[in-house]
Length: 81
Picture 1 (cartoon, rainbow, N blue to C red):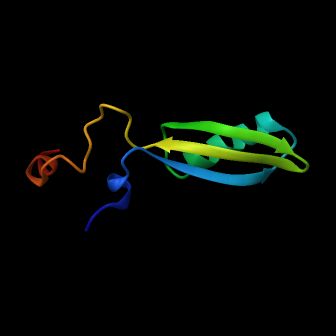
Picture 2 (picture 1 turned 45 degrees about the vertical axis):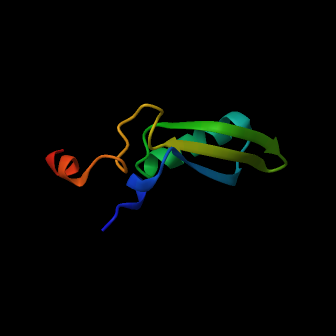
């Protein structure tokens, strides 16, 4: 079975509205959420405080440019990993 996360070419973007006091708190909450989901290479690419919270978009990089992409590595080499 194909692992969906291994088929991601670059990154996952997750956007939501977090109820919080300010933009900095919203950024920290998003990073903590991504980390809790097991995503380690993360960043906040957008945050805007509006009313009761922050509209925030977090990004979790699955593959950075020049990585060894799992979707182009032959299966025989993947088994050796």
